[in-house]
Amino acid sequence: MNFKKRLNTRVVASLIVLAFSAPTFSTPAPIVVCYPGGPVSEAEANSAMGAMLRVVERVGEWPQNSFTSYFTAQVDECRNLLNNKKPAFAITSLGLFLEQRDAHHLIPVVQPRMKGATSERYRLMVQKDKYSHLDSLKGKSIGGTVFEEPDFLKNIVFEGKVDPSGYFNLQPSRQAIRALRSLDKGELDAVLLNGQQFAALESLQLKTPLAAAFTSADIPLMGLVANSQASKPEERARLAKALQGMCSDTDGKKLCDLFGIEAFVPANSSAIDAMIKLWQHGK
Image (cartoon, rainbow, N blue to C red; front, side):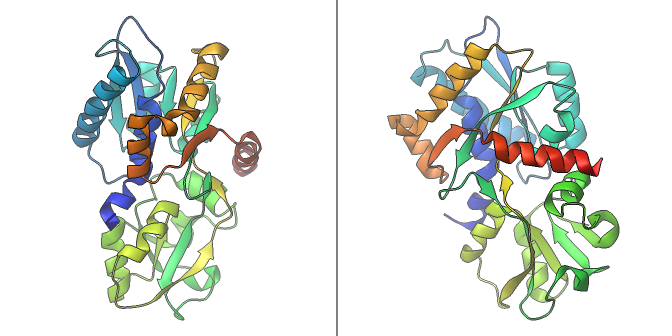
């Protein structure tokens, strides 16, 4: 799998989660997918989601066109979609989940497990032996695609130790590969990568060896979340059960294997509760 495909793993995994999890509704059920800073366009994502949903409807024996998707890579637009569409189930980033949890009564349902883990770590990658720790990067140019949620970075990734928006000279990019090539050339001092982007490094041939000047603690991968007031406990239980068997389904396994998903498992409440405490502490 090439670098670009691996970078899209998170958003596709999110789409798969939603596609296989919606109950039957009399009108198309809105599925909101929020992927802040992602390289996938809205048109491409909704087109892919539509094609996937038609397969899911057939495999799951739901009526055709039972679902409709709403995708955005913009944080503000995600807030608008949650407010206007009022979905019973959605995919959001961890940062948006924490921010919107109270307003939309959000609770986690399932998470994807990838390479044996339901969590990831963020890393500040630098040219090897150039910068050795976080303090040495103060005021330096930092590239990456993950700067759309500054409060998430400050409170969760850096655990309140630094505020990236003021501590670094941030250089946002739509593509991690572009930022990494700039780092390779010495045009950037560091690049902040999420777990999937870091895992894809091995497929990218860079001239200069890289090392991590900072590595975050484990951060949960988000999957399906539910509005606890717009969904019933039995619906959430049904979806969780369906998802846990998805990767053993003949057609579902093909999708899981394609994007490196081993299984969908119940959300790790203790890990997510720890993120909630960090978030509240930083408010």
